[in-house]
Amino acid sequence: MLPLAAQSMTGLPGLELQGLITLILQFFVAMLRIGAFLISSPLLGARWVPLQVRLTMSVMLTLIIWQYTTPVSVEMLTSYQAILIVFSEISIGLSAGLILTIWFSAVLLAGEKVAASSGLSFAAQMDPSTGGQTPVVSQIFYLFMLVLFTSTDGHLVAIHTLLDSYRILPIGVIPSFELFISAGIQAAGTMFYAASIIMLPFTVILLLINVSIGIITRSAPSLNLFSIGFPITLIGIFFVLYFSTTSLAISVSSLTDASLMNFQDIMKGLISG
Image (cartoon, rainbow, N blue to C red):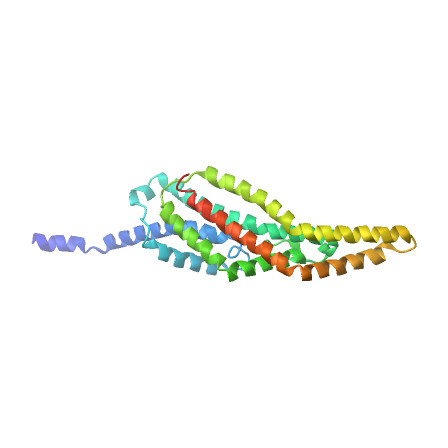
């Protein structure tokens, strides 16, 4: 009688359901870091990417790393430490995605300044990634960088680095948030520096064009400055953009490599932080 009673007690369906709920909760906590990264990353975090695609990718990537991670214990998930764990996982994913987004914003800033100095700022369109009005030149630069980023498997390197962060910093370990703050400030400073390097050749050529127009206007005051200078500036910037495609590709490729290296250094620095 006793073995039959023990067997009937272990076969209760409520016990299996409780284990399933615990497994789903642990899976959800493991998915927070990946989901936050996909929301704030420059490629998959755009508004034109459907939310269903992000959720599907989050679930698939979590299934990949699920067998290599140690799930958080039920005691931690049912205590006050669960709030710290959820906050830290979301902070890691959001910080990693935002730092990459800041690096990618360098080409947007460079394109905006080139358009403003050449008169192409009138040609603006709705940016699907931010929802605001941006010049067409900025969109061309940004799409150019996305094409180079995906063609060189940069998105795969970023995802692999994020998945590797589970080994460096397991779930439940609180990281040092000073590392993310300093990395964000450094990325912001590098964004302005890289934008200045990209837009410097265009600015110098536009300066030479404006100086030449000023000399012509000074020597022949009867000429209308706006009827001559504005078309010449537009034609000149179109030629410069066409012939500087190769050098622009080298600059954007270097910016992509630097952003990935910085992203990997941040993820590797979590273990020391």
